[in-house]
Length: 511
Image (cartoon, rainbow, N blue to C red; front, side, top):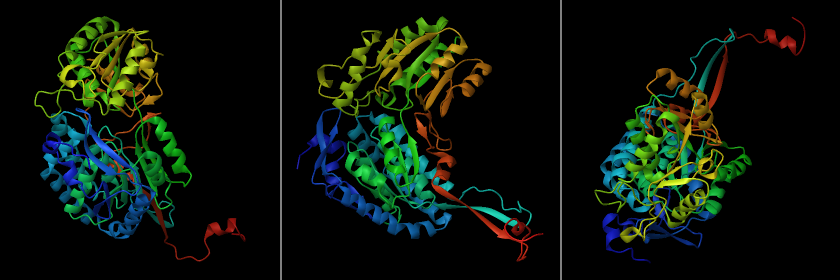
């Protein structure tokens, strides 16, 4: 087995912690049975930090069977019992917060300050939220809506959920998939990205430590083509939730609909950042740099297209470029690091390809290159600002998923809104203005699942996250997410005790 070396072990001892394997089925770690191995690579150094056996279809079958066996007991638990278990779960996560932060930074390359201050506390908070939500399933009040009957609505768990999470926020995405599903009484099989399984495995182990029954949460770590497609198409899986690219989402939908599953898709984004001429320029510049560079731009809600009204355009470009140049690239575990590497060298090269092609038709104001020196062996790319691109160009229309912001000018408010809506995506957006009327118009007319005003990126457990158009459908977080993991049943009682109902005459006999 590959020895990851002292530095990786000190940051997070993945080889020791997961020596038994990268599959978590029925409450224990096991090795995959595909016959193929995979390495988790530290993108800051290119070093392998954990090698494991990938899941095959037999592992998926075993995980689904474990979830199916656990379902009757978990579904019949009272909302209070499930709530208590999730409160214990939140406490265990909080107690193990540093482990989670280090594992997340090791496998993703994100700065430790981002893992500690965003990913991990957000996940703990989300767990606590769904602990409370478990007691608050909403339904229409019971009543005599027909006059002769009493009707009420039951919300029941669906069954086994098969979910697929991406590599950009492995911990938070695992939580977003798992928590509403199990709070509602379902059991789950989660497939994390094979690049980043560590925190999903820690998450499942923490659930077991909190006393959740074996089989309620299961993890299979394999490729999308083998483990993912088998999970989505499995006849015992009643619902599929997927977060990832729009292209892969289309394939997930194709496989899922063959067995008529409920489907939840959170797909790509190309978030517009609309700056009107009465905006606070300092706030907009700071917001643009933070919103574009969070997680090295590997965020489907990241600010990627800044539309700036003409009077502020030149100053915005100049000041945004200057602020980007102050961002400190470096070791994710170093206290002074602002920006870590991309997830892999392949992703770094993909981002660089977009920028290089853009040089033919646009101006790279700052960035546009990988750093040299000590960072050359990692998957680093400098924060990049591009101006002068046309609205229909690749750099404006396609999801890059890297630290790249494109800035375009607009003249009228109508034009700014039109340009903001002019991509296939509709996940998130922001508008910047000192006018409540302009701000309200932006929230109405921009077609996106989330529109921020004078900020970009913050999320909270109580509010939904999900998109319009090619960004998919369904919601993560919030009570809206919780409801998606339930089956709605209408129950209707006759109150008349009359054998021959008046409506029967429409089928036989006379009044």
